[in-house]
Length: 273
Image (cartoon, rainbow, N blue to C red; front, side):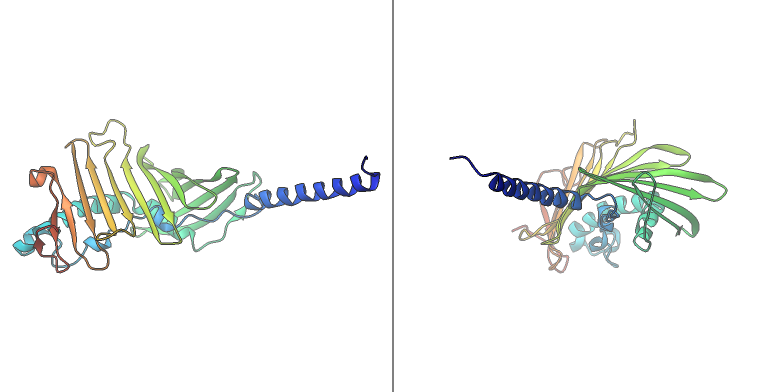
């Protein structure tokens, strides 16, 4: 027996309503009328604070029993120093963005415009964010009065959930070549994640070298660095517990083997468990 015209009409109406609900839900997550959310500062800024303690910052200044910890500090300090100097402008520009509201643009993107200071010098920034079904795309243009205008210092991409993404940084206005590639992941529910800086300077002897930092919920160590140097064909691995301060380091070039060398919660050298 066939369906009545009224039954068919009701069914069609319910089907159309369902399609509209699904369509609205889908559009809501990528609605270009909503400003994109900035990725966290930790997507660009690596945390080196656990290896910046006064008094044991260098092996030469520390008691002999702190050699393992001191060697870990020295390896981390090298990258920290290089990145602090070379990334001072892009990092300052990105961190300042969180203090400003974006404005919609005619092309559907959003723009953050503001001034900021880096190394005591005033700059201006224009950060653009554009959303599509695959994520958000970022472009940062920086200007310095009397020096350069709208230099695209870095670009980026984040997924819609803001749990992973990438940045590409360029060296400087006078040397606009790719400098640093950044990959990041995070799990907000348990505060874990990782951040990796990779040297992408063309023809550089350490191109492909990286420092990889991560936080996990593993025991006995819940944080790590891997520091790789192509020119030395060497990878330094560091693991430690952020709560108790004990940890270990493996450096084939320095120690002459693939063993781990450990330190205690008081930073004394100890035999690895």
